[in-house]
Length: 198
Image (cartoon, rainbow, N blue to C red):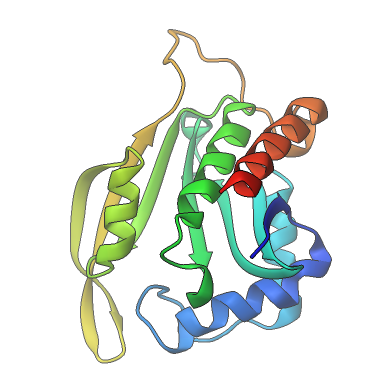
């Protein structure tokens, strides 16, 4: 199977939603109750991609996973912090592809001068917790019984990872469309070369 990671396009929304929808309807991994409309989901992608990396994983031109960063909190002091999100379709799971997606995402976020990454995970999603731990995320806390879905209360686990040096005065946050395009393309080429070799 040939895999490729690339930046999202708005025309990808339908395929991405196809990956995401079962996590809403069949699991407690997403806390959404209702699958968003294609129009709503397209607007979400557009809003996120206006500031942060949003990347997709393709297998033979079909999207089988995606990852993105989004604003953690609104205050200016949090400009160097993001929450990260990743979803893989069942056929892409258990192959180390989530690690590769996150590696690409981290390298792109470094171009934005982002420093702190946070992940909010349903407490019984052991696979995701272990994957985040394996790539350097640390457990920072649990919100007990924070969500109710499929007739049960669910804990939420927060994990965190720092990237880059913490300078006394950090460089300004750069919106993703404004990062050096050559450097962003270099990241994608390197990641895809790694995928080709494996």
